[in-house]
Every structure is written in structure tokens, then in C-alpha cells.
Length: 157
Image 1: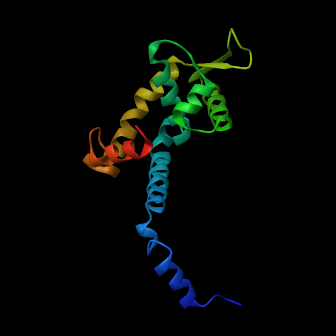
Image 2: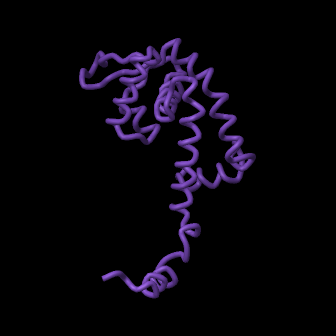
Image 3: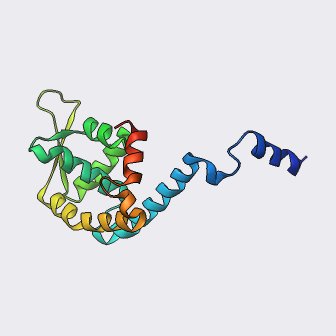
């Protein structure tokens, strides 16, 4: 037996926020997926997926001091599951954009460095991603913008 439409409506009126568009989590989910799809299209000419770009950008960020990063550090900083990071680093290594080697002090730990090819890929792809961010989020998404500031507060920064 199908539920009565009045019962369904009552649930939304009494126990929800009234409509999906009123739920921050739902709206964030939709915006994030829209951004990811747009990033996938924008990065395709650069030979990168959005997750590969994010991983490469995080490796570059961590390695800017000249020190190699651990895979675990990349995973934590990017908040990406360690198995996904491992797969992304393997793909990026295959493209010559990162190098991975065992740690000299702990053979279970893999050290990751960005290569010259990876740095060039970032230099080529960053303008594409920055333009996408400006197009989708405008001034509110820029450093110091209201949207970015609100997201930082939610993220605990």
C-alpha cells in the first residue's frame, strides 16, 4: 500500500525544514556536486580530474617548504580518504606529476614530492580553477568574501 499524500505532506510540514531548499546540507551537497562537475569539465583539457587536481594541489602546498609530504599528511590536509589519496597519487605518479618513495625511517610510510611536470600542471590548471571559482561564487567566494568566511567558520577555522 502506498503512503497517503497527506501523511507525506504532514511529515514535511511538521518534522522537516519545509522543503529541500531550506536544508543547508542539501544545498551544500548540490552546490558541491555542481562545482565538481564544472571542475571536471574545466580540468579535462589539462588531463586531470577534479580529485587528481585537488590531490596535486595539496601535495604542492605541503611541499612548498621543500620537504616531501607523507601520504597520510596529504589525506588529512585534504580530508580525503587514505585509499582515495593512494589511488590519486598512483595515477599522478603514472603521469609523472608526483614521485613516491618509502620513508627512510618507516618503510610503511610513503613520502610524496611534486615533480617539475606536476608543478607545470598546477601552473597551467590553477587559472582555470580560479576562474571557475570566480564565475560560480563571485566576490562572496573570494578570499575575505562572505561565503568563504562563513564556510571557514563552519569548518572550524
